[in-house]
Length: 305
Image (cartoon, rainbow, N blue to C red; front, side, top):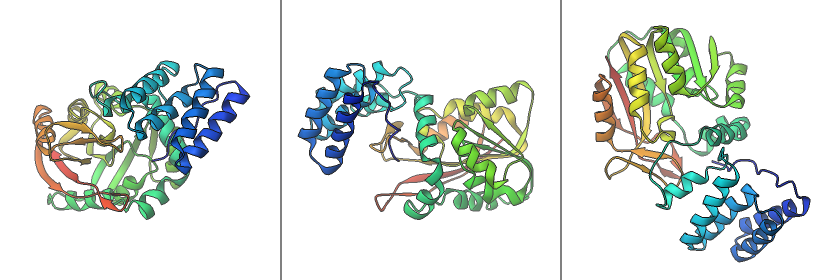
């Protein structure tokens, strides 16, 4: 996924050096890029985008300690961490796994929204909605749901797959630009800009209930799925279903991949579902997308109460 739009330093010369550095970085001249970024930072020491790019360059040069320093400087310069410097610190082992910064996720998807559908379906062979629909069908339940909640709905790819089965469909997402794309399709009866966990907590407080809850390509942005699963269980109607995708790995627990997406081992997912009081109806290995032409190991899960 593309990086967030660069932030300005407020210094025109520093911004120009940054742009030249990015061009050299793209061409593979890492040493030249590092030199220009250092010049930009001399002019604007609090330039978050330059610190972040310098972290990327140092990392590619194999200079781990210097990369950690640069990413830490980027995060300090932009407390909202719109570039996601904290994720690189986690990836480099400089800090433990943690929730992704909301402003990073929002900025990332706001930038990506106009080309999101085409990139996923044409370039990444994204198929989570179809796999989830097939998994729900295999439960043998009646394929008609009074109310459907689409967590992290994005532009509405999963919503479109399930809309014919729903009387009422609600979509929730952090990114206003993604929601604008979804709104233009007319798939949802209600769209809300909110963090999924915060939204679920609010719905539980008013005793809202959903017959089907979806989360397609969402849990990759959560280090710990347990809170969302527990909150989902609280708004799931009796006999309701929760269907979601996740990326997985061969090790234990949760890891942050080089793609800056979290992968959850199947045992970790099962444990979190059990802790939430949900019963696993199916948990199957399936690749929901590719990365550089290679299938990404994943899980398609359906659970109920």
